[in-house]
Length: 195
Length: 366
Image (tube, rainbow over all chains, first blue to last red; front, side, top):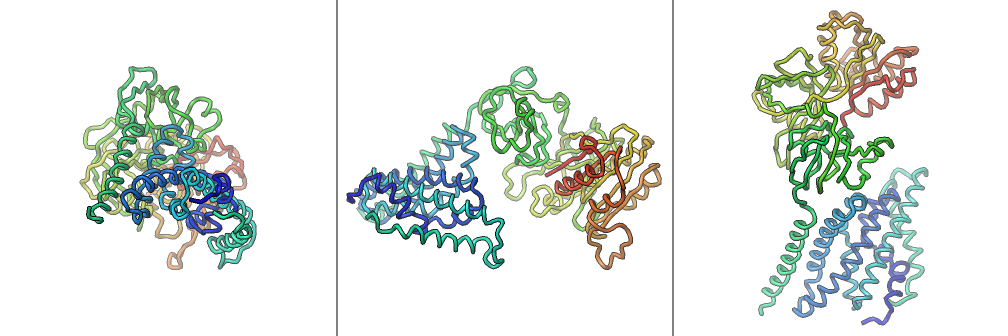
């Protein structure tokens, strides 16, 4: 068990150990959906929501199902199944409760099922032996961190529409370069808090 | 216990539990029970919920015009929903004016029937019917465009104004989940009671056009519904300009045949835009109309004539050709039929030349 407080983990996973910029997880949707702030914020919100929820659920599945049966090695597949089902369920609930939110998030939810950052959070939570509260904080913090990173990137890319990029680097090329520079800035914080 | 067996059991148990949860959730949340639909304050009708209002109404033999077939891109399927429509969705707002939003106008393809609804539908839409038809002949007019003649299977009382359109129901083929509907203008004149001609151009990966071009055979039975639209020749003495692109010649063929039959006198110039000679069709028909309709002139224009075309007519984009042909177009009327991009470009040219927007008529099938 780690001694770090839940709030510290929350803040640290946003700025210091950003899931996207320090661990490079969830890059595919980060590159694909960061063209505009509007869609990026939609996806970001969906990621925050799903990450928090699945880190909590996967904690319960791991502690109450996989550990007692000695099947920890099945965590990957079990976590993926839980994530997929959660996303489906969330999609239905949102569709029923708020059609407007459904249309804002709806198309992004299925994308998230296969987002490696979501699975990554659940796996890190196991490796780092977090408690339930710490896991929730870590999930929420990583979600916010991912959202922050994609919003920053979308803002940059919107501004960049007017700048002349070398044809060879247009699109994903320049985006990966920018992501690298952004990651450098975040790496500067690394080691400030032990997670 | 055998570790392999245990692993399989635990994992399938987990998956089964989640699947069960999803099934229950779907029952409780998504599929809603029957709902009552009240149309124009008539007797309420009991319908099964869960589907879009457009599809539900179609099940009740009420055909709301929809060119895109319920994808929310054409904005034609507007109805007024007074109760039970739920909040306005972001997919609808681009198609609605502020006045329409205030009047509770909604796109029926985006509204799901989840509770009792009270709506107003223009009475003329209630008269639109479905007709069983048989493919009488298929003619390839260019390498990618077909003219299909649909004969009514029963003696039909199908009356329409030249320029209107119908929807063709594409039957289920090749993994299509449900029949889809696509709109096509009628190319045959209203006096023809026995059949309808439609001009259908192949769209890459288009559901209906692929069906028509690859699977449809003479003798096949289909259903069409209609007629729809307010694209018809206005009864004025003003000079008119018709602009057609691709399969957009269809409504003009009907209008011109109708003008010839009813001896309507109006100065009309038809601009037909194509890429090269192989995209042109029905040019003999146009020459025939030039003789029969006094005041009619057809101007085909090619944007990129091939060298072997030995083309001596107008060249350039249709918008350029039209702009070049008139000093000013004040007092004229514009009729447009073609792709949404072409229509938008033409509206700009016509308004620049002095035709007010309310005198420009078009059908935009997107």
